Image (cartoon, rainbow, N blue to C red; front, side, top):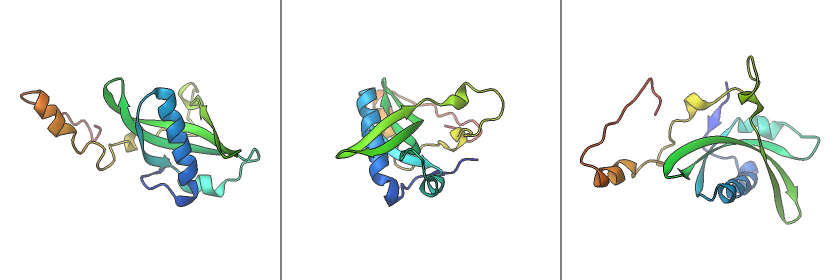
Length: 137
């Protein structure tokens, strides 16, 4: 099962931030970098192409809704920055067990991401119904 870490290792921080900025620009929305999937595997794995594959958890406001997404990127140092490529998740189209797996059960909102959400919603409505289903949000 994939391990989602909230703290991005210093050795991956610059690449992760480059991917976040690229993704936010592509989506025309602001996203926060709230986690990384299996960072130790990334640090231990040397790529023949010189690119690192990062799976990042990005939370932000997309089309008026707060979302947390797991996105995959290939990141290669190039010129004065990084070349970022968004990778399609082949696991979604595959049949049978996936090599990557899905960290979806681990994607509860990180601490602080929704800190002011309830206060904001209560200002707009007279009451709010919160539904929790088997630990998922």
